[in-house]
Image 1 (cartoon, rainbow, N blue to C red):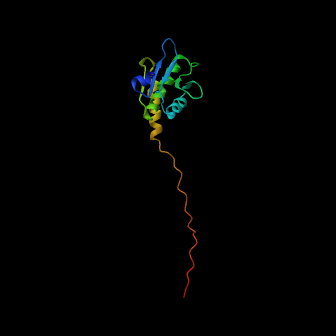
Image 2 (image 1 turned 60 degrees about the horizontal axis):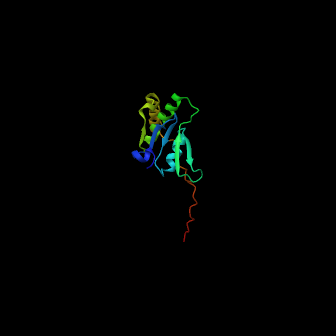
Image 3 (image 1 turned 90 degrees about the horizontal axis):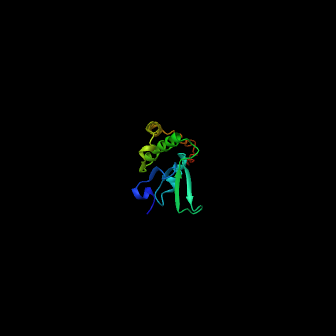
Length: 135
């Protein structure tokens, strides 16, 4: 038996752990490091057991945030995770629809914004020309 992400076949399961008020983000056993890094970038706190060479890795929404802010953080993470190609499920009681929609608009705007590219380097036009011999 694994965690919720293993049980449901998702990449991220966002839910309140039983008998607590802690919002968890469970990932599959052996989930990719990129996914764990992305969850941290989105404001989630990483936990490992045992520390060092973890057998279990999970994330939580920072508990120092108020309950509504915790829901907003969890909801705002979803569009980025989806755009990165991950399958995400969130407990409906945790979904802040307004925060989700705002984050979705921001992710879409960021994706549509053209990436500024550096101009190609100029090739030197002053290449030495070989001398011509005249007979």
